[in-house]
Amino acid sequence: KISLFPEVVNLDFVYTPSFDADRFIDGRRISFFNPLAGEITGRGQPLQVDRRQSWFRDDEISARLYRRFGSVEAALYGYRGYWKSPGGFDIQSGQATFPRLAVYGGSLRGPLLSGIANLEVGYYDSRDDRSGDNPLVRNSEFRALAGYERELMSNFTIGMKYYVEQLLDYGDFRRA
Image 1 (cartoon, one colour):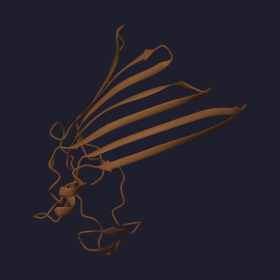
Image 2 (image 1 turned 180 degrees about the vertical axis):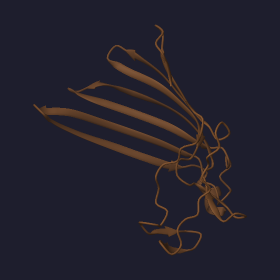
Image 3 (image 1 turned 135 degrees about the horizontal axis):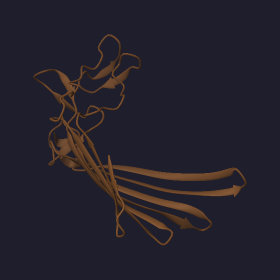
């Protein structure tokens, strides 16, 4: 990780030389609906996953530019890597895969009505299926999160958040 703090805008840059997946449900401990099998699967049929472990070939890069404007913090984000949970399937190997992903987004956070409000938006660009017509690869998405929190009394803060996720190219997804 490298952080730079020039006067105009701050920069955080992170390079990960080997892809690091999230922990995800694979059926060994918790059953799940497997759309390829058309049923709930679990211990008898755990999800077989192609786990990337190649140094410097399956790397990840992320960056954040941020700055304060008075009492408001604004930021722009970028990421190039892979979906962190299996979002694709390779028919030849019979394994779930981690398709390539790029994410672009921004956020605002600052005071509003005696509290703190925040807004975050992001475009998840599924680089292995930009047209959305491959049923074996997760489609691109738009995501947004809006929140507000306020301290009502000493040591008692109340907050609320609204989150939306929109699958893009839904018509192509349905046809495929």
